[in-house]
Image (cartoon, rainbow, N blue to C red):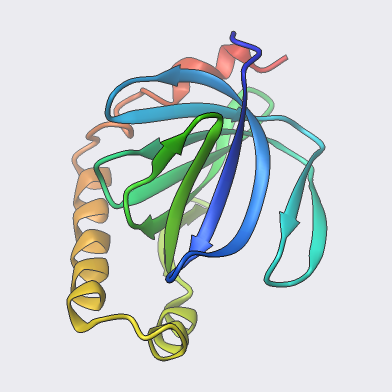
Length: 168
């Protein structure tokens, strides 16, 4: 495992820093990056003006060409839950990976997938002035992500699980 630190920054539409945390690089290609979120890391949440301690390991996926991220919570060597953001494709600038979070999330908990934060998407559409095309694209990308999961397509094809052994 690389010891290269990667800072992840979630932005709101218009470039407003929403939250950030530090991770360790696992794999990087021209189209995606996998990182490891360590147990006990600090997440600086600028919108809420708070710092949270994350009390689990995560394997995280950031696409540079698709409109979603994946964070898999790992407990006792297994994926306990998935948290997927719908967002504009991530970008890399040096040691910083950033993405524009479009609020809609797809979450797997207790054996079920569910769409969450529809209310936040609706309110932020007005607050940040999402163009109609962006609203349509976010909905389309959510449907596409659900289809990708159902078909067990990358990174839901075992790509995430191969990193579990790297967790101490």
